[in-house]
Length: 125
Image (tube, rainbow, N blue to C red; front, side, top):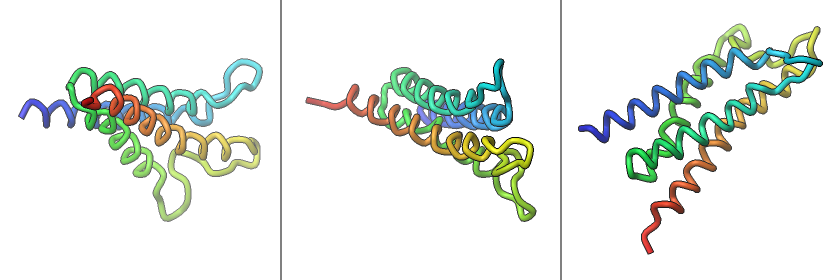
Protein backbone atom coordinates (compact mmCIF):
# COMPACT_ATOMS: atom_id res chain seq x y z
CA UNK A 1 0.00 0.00 0.00
CA UNK A 2 2.86 2.34 0.78
CA UNK A 3 4.43 1.60 -2.60
CA UNK A 4 1.21 2.57 -4.40
CA UNK A 5 1.04 5.80 -2.38
CA UNK A 6 4.62 6.62 -3.37
CA UNK A 7 3.85 6.00 -7.05
CA UNK A 8 0.76 8.22 -6.87
CA UNK A 9 2.72 10.96 -5.10
CA UNK A 10 5.42 10.85 -7.77
CA UNK A 11 2.82 11.01 -10.55
CA UNK A 12 1.10 13.99 -8.89
CA UNK A 13 4.45 15.74 -8.50
CA UNK A 14 5.15 15.15 -12.18
CA UNK A 15 1.72 16.53 -13.12
CA UNK A 16 2.35 19.63 -11.00
CA UNK A 17 5.71 20.19 -12.68
CA UNK A 18 4.09 19.73 -16.09
CA UNK A 19 1.43 22.35 -15.43
CA UNK A 20 3.98 24.79 -13.99
CA UNK A 21 6.33 24.39 -16.94
CA UNK A 22 3.52 24.73 -19.49
CA UNK A 23 2.79 28.20 -18.20
CA UNK A 24 6.50 29.08 -18.58
CA UNK A 25 6.57 28.36 -22.33
CA UNK A 26 5.88 31.98 -23.36
CA UNK A 27 8.31 33.38 -20.75
CA UNK A 28 11.25 35.39 -22.08
CA UNK A 29 14.25 36.06 -19.88
CA UNK A 30 16.71 38.93 -20.08
CA UNK A 31 17.85 39.67 -23.61
CA UNK A 32 14.95 37.73 -25.14
CA UNK A 33 16.34 34.32 -24.10
CA UNK A 34 13.64 31.69 -24.34
CA UNK A 35 13.44 28.02 -23.51
CA UNK A 36 13.39 27.96 -19.71
CA UNK A 37 10.34 25.67 -19.88
CA UNK A 38 12.28 23.23 -22.07
CA UNK A 39 15.12 23.00 -19.58
CA UNK A 40 12.65 22.65 -16.73
CA UNK A 41 10.76 19.89 -18.54
CA UNK A 42 13.91 17.86 -19.06
CA UNK A 43 15.54 18.45 -15.68
CA UNK A 44 12.38 18.20 -13.58
CA UNK A 45 11.21 14.87 -14.97
CA UNK A 46 14.72 13.44 -15.05
CA UNK A 47 15.81 14.43 -11.56
CA UNK A 48 12.44 13.81 -9.93
CA UNK A 49 12.17 10.39 -11.55
CA UNK A 50 15.67 9.29 -10.64
CA UNK A 51 15.48 10.54 -7.06
CA UNK A 52 12.02 9.01 -6.73
CA UNK A 53 13.38 5.66 -7.85
CA UNK A 54 16.20 5.90 -5.33
CA UNK A 55 13.75 6.81 -2.57
CA UNK A 56 11.29 4.06 -3.37
CA UNK A 57 13.97 1.52 -4.16
CA UNK A 58 12.45 0.41 -7.47
CA UNK A 59 13.43 1.37 -11.00
CA UNK A 60 9.79 1.53 -12.12
CA UNK A 61 9.25 4.56 -9.89
CA UNK A 62 11.51 6.59 -12.21
CA UNK A 63 8.83 6.87 -14.88
CA UNK A 64 5.96 7.87 -12.59
CA UNK A 65 6.72 11.63 -12.63
CA UNK A 66 6.96 11.43 -16.41
CA UNK A 67 3.57 9.74 -16.65
CA UNK A 68 2.00 12.44 -14.51
CA UNK A 69 3.82 15.12 -16.52
CA UNK A 70 2.63 13.87 -19.90
CA UNK A 71 -0.97 13.40 -18.74
CA UNK A 72 -1.07 16.98 -17.44
CA UNK A 73 0.61 18.49 -20.50
CA UNK A 74 -1.63 16.62 -22.95
CA UNK A 75 -4.71 17.61 -20.96
CA UNK A 76 -3.62 21.26 -21.11
CA UNK A 77 -2.95 21.07 -24.83
CA UNK A 78 -6.23 19.56 -26.09
CA UNK A 79 -9.13 21.75 -27.18
CA UNK A 80 -11.54 21.90 -30.07
CA UNK A 81 -10.75 25.53 -30.82
CA UNK A 82 -6.98 25.16 -30.82
CA UNK A 83 -4.23 25.58 -28.25
CA UNK A 84 -5.12 25.90 -24.61
CA UNK A 85 -1.95 26.64 -22.67
CA UNK A 86 0.97 25.73 -24.92
CA UNK A 87 0.64 27.88 -28.03
CA UNK A 88 1.53 26.42 -31.41
CA UNK A 89 2.18 29.81 -32.96
CA UNK A 90 1.78 33.51 -32.35
CA UNK A 91 2.03 36.24 -34.94
CA UNK A 92 4.02 38.43 -32.55
CA UNK A 93 6.41 35.64 -31.49
CA UNK A 94 7.36 33.14 -34.19
CA UNK A 95 9.70 31.16 -31.90
CA UNK A 96 7.04 30.16 -29.40
CA UNK A 97 5.91 27.21 -31.51
CA UNK A 98 9.41 25.75 -31.39
CA UNK A 99 9.64 26.27 -27.63
CA UNK A 100 6.24 24.63 -27.14
CA UNK A 101 7.16 21.63 -29.26
CA UNK A 102 10.49 21.23 -27.51
CA UNK A 103 8.70 21.41 -24.17
CA UNK A 104 6.54 18.47 -25.17
CA UNK A 105 9.64 16.49 -26.12
CA UNK A 106 11.82 17.57 -23.19
CA UNK A 107 9.69 15.89 -20.53
CA UNK A 108 9.59 12.68 -22.50
CA UNK A 109 13.36 12.66 -22.91
CA UNK A 110 13.84 13.47 -19.21
CA UNK A 111 11.61 10.53 -18.31
CA UNK A 112 13.58 8.27 -20.63
CA UNK A 113 16.87 9.36 -19.07
CA UNK A 114 15.53 8.80 -15.55
CA UNK A 115 14.25 5.35 -16.48
CA UNK A 116 17.54 4.30 -18.07
CA UNK A 117 19.65 5.60 -15.18
CA UNK A 118 17.40 3.99 -12.57
CA UNK A 119 17.35 0.74 -14.53
CA UNK A 120 21.13 0.65 -14.58
CA UNK A 121 21.29 1.49 -10.89
CA UNK A 122 18.95 -1.30 -9.86
CA UNK A 123 20.09 -3.92 -12.36
CA UNK A 124 20.97 -7.16 -10.65
CA UNK A 125 24.26 -8.63 -11.66
